[in-house]
Amino acid sequence: GDAIGGVDGNLNDAATELEYHAGEAGRRCTEGFAAMNREASRMYNRREVVSAKLKQLVSTQRLAVQAQLARQKGLKRITGRRESLKQQCREDLEGYKRRLTQYKRARVAAARREGKEPMNIIDCATITWTQMGVCTKKCGGGTAKFVRRKISEATPDGAQCGVMELERPCNRFQCPTHCEVSAWSGWEPCNKPCGGGVQLRHRNVTTAPKGSRGTKCPVLSETQQCNVGACETNCVLAPWTDWGKCTRACGGGHQMRFRNVSTPAKDGGICPDAKDRTEWRECNARECPSGGAASDFTCGEKLDIVFLVDVSGSLAAEDLGKVRKLLADSLAWFSLSPSTVQMAVGASAGETKVLTELTGDEDEVKRAVDNIPGPGGTTHWGNAYTTARAMLAKGRPEAASVVVMITDGSPNRRFVPSKAAEALKEQGVRLGVIAHGELRYLKFRLQPFTSDPEDDNLISLTDLSALNGKGLMASFCSEPLGLPAPGSSTSLR
Image 1 (cartoon, rainbow, N blue to C red):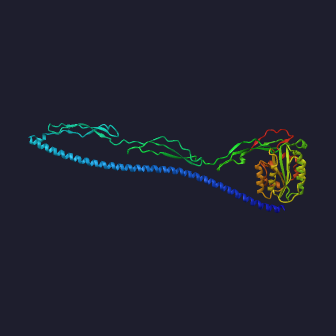
Image 2 (cartoon, rainbow, N blue to C red; image 1 turned 90 degrees about the vertical axis):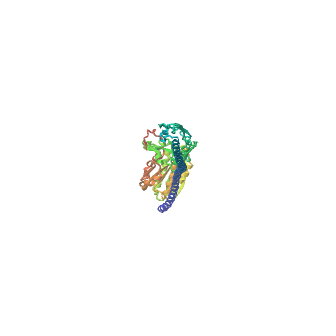
Image 3 (cartoon, helix red, strand yellow; image 1 turned 180 degrees about the vertical axis):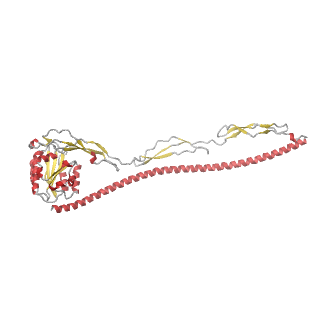
């Protein structure tokens, strides 16, 4: 029956495990999609930054093109006016030359009529006008001084030199007004707290440019990327807890301290796993007493302990008797009472039967131990640990909680029981296993059902007779009575 139940249990357990892993795969996919969405958001923000800068460059380019077209139009207009003036000057110069020639001819004729020799008439000769210095103004209309020097004097009948110095207007074009801008404002708040955002700063035109030669205004706004750090937030750990209770009353145990997560990680942040947030050190290294009565060495801890006895079909009747004897023998050493140790007993074989709830009544527990049923049915630990959880829920909140499985075989269903055991561990319940018979060679199969450290919570025996009540109490009680005060402890990791 236990063998057939084992096959059926393994199949059911495999189906349950597949469902669990499918759910875990779905969760990982959801987290993966969330991470991809965060990355897409960061890329979108970077695109916004690039797009803003591109718009800024396009706007600057458009203004530059417009300014270039305006300059080209102005240059064309000025060039046309210049050519028109040059042509007018050429025409005026030709007119002056013709009039001068006509004048000289008339003067020669007049001299001859008066009986004078035309060759003796000499005009004043000068060099070309030369500008002296620079224009009095760079723009807006100034004056410049021009002079010429005589080369030869005129005869009385010749043309006199006339004015030798004069002032002419210069730089009559409008003075340009250069653009002036204010200082940059501070950066505006970033539009996103993390994952890459955009912020803006700007400046204003204080003086608008005027004239073709006025300096154009520079860029009036700038953008930059901000808060580029990922939105992921790592967890925050609380300080180390105080050292916990020792796992053994004597003979060398271990005690633990732990760092809880005060602020969980979010958005893909990292957090050390429980193993990296746990420290262990040795404790209660003194030897357990080899003799003495139970009244001399008992458990003084406030403890709620549940014993689960695997009574599936593989258990031999002889071993059932040894289990009963071991639990009955331990009662005096645990020294049950409402103020210290309370004990509960359950029998597991397919379904789990509660033989007694947690109680400090030694007689009641003794009757429950005597009534542990004979072997039969399949090994179903998932139900056993779920039942133990319900039994502890009726216990004392301030008491330490321990669940011990006594078994000669591993569970038919491994996945479901391990999840049930894990739920107990997460509640701070200490789990122990007493494995006897051939099972002692399969420690790896029992690891999910023992608390850390495994060596303190897994007792492997060829024969249950090798363990007595005093040893059972010493293995799961942290605060013994009747022993010297513990010595110094050695820390270890």
